[in-house]
Picture (cartoon, rainbow, N blue to C red):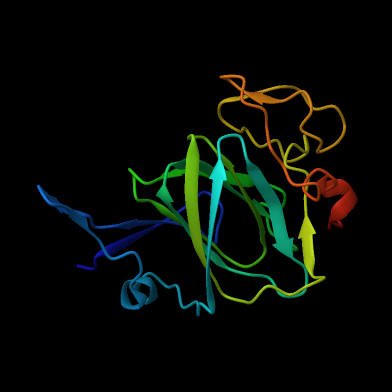
Length: 201
C-alpha cells in the first residue's frame, strides 16, 4: 500500500491528499509527495516550481487563476491553519462556478490538489500560517486573473467570518469572529464577480 492516499471530491478534478504519518515519542515522519502513489491514483501532473508564503490571521489571498497558462496546484500548510478554496472555471463543466473548500492545517497534514482550470484562494484562521504549494506551470507576468472572494454568485462560506456583501471585493465591514479585520492585497480588493469576469456557456 502506498504512503499517500488520494480521495476524490464532489467536484471532479479536485483531490484531497492524505499522507501516512509515522509518529512516536521523537516526533513524526511522512512522505509529503510520492509520484508513484499519485500515478496509481490517476494523477500524472508534472511540477515545475515550489512556492511558500507566510500570512497572519485574517489574511485572505485570492481568488487567483492564470488565463492562458493554467496551473495545477498541490497545496498544504506547514504551520497554522487555513481554509482553502477552489472554484470551477472549466468551460462546459457541469459544476462551473461551484466551489469546494476544506481546512488545511499542520495538525491534519491534509493536502489539496487543484487541477488546471480552477480559481484558488485561502483564508488564514490561525494567528499565523505557513503555506506551501507545488505548481505545474510557471508564473506568467500579465496572465493573472482573479475573482471577488465574496461574490454572491459563487457563495463561498468562509468560516469564522462576519459581514455582508456590499457590491465589491473590498473587505471593509468584514471581520473574523474575534474581531480580526480581513487583510487583502490592493489587487484582490479590485477583482469582480464571476458574471463580469467569465463568459457563461
